[in-house]
Length: 250
Image 1: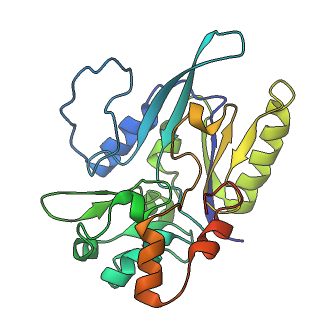
Image 2 (image 1 turned 60 degrees about the vertical axis):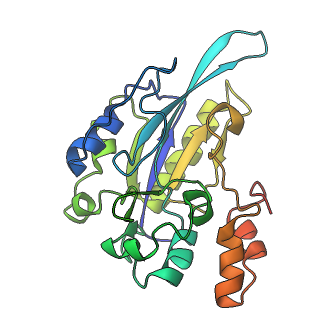
């Protein structure tokens, strides 16, 4: 399978948030007014203005020792993106997929989708966000303008720890598998999250619940499934469950 992919090595992430800041700068996205809620994570969720977010999660190991798990969240650029299939039922070409890279891009036409669906219903990872004033949807677009000119995505360019990697898909899969073997020498439970279904492959050293509720895909009871059935007459529940692997909720 051709195209581009990210490899995100969570074992190396220090939560410097360089990727989060670089994304804001390149996309010229405004800062958000936030408040202290007792967490180092800031802001507390993705939004139309924050399409990349480093999530912080406190966990305890088997000995009760506190440990931090950091999760730089972004659109996964699914191989077969549900947001494209569902979104385009409401807005033709509202969500497009670049043929060369595989990048999934939300266009200005997503205003036609508006609030007919929620983010959880549109995306199995609950990533896209809507501007409540305009109805426009947004998310990471793989820095397609940079990639098409031979540059790295801003988040990858800014990463000082080697967490963020980007390149041809086959190279990123090979890198992910090589790195996984290395990490498993000291952490045998390490794994790759949904590697066959997405173009953003995370290497994880903790259980999904110790990172983020949307680490793995979920289609359980979603309008994404119900809408697909009602609009197209095609039952996509098994298709989506199969697409996102055995860990998806079907």
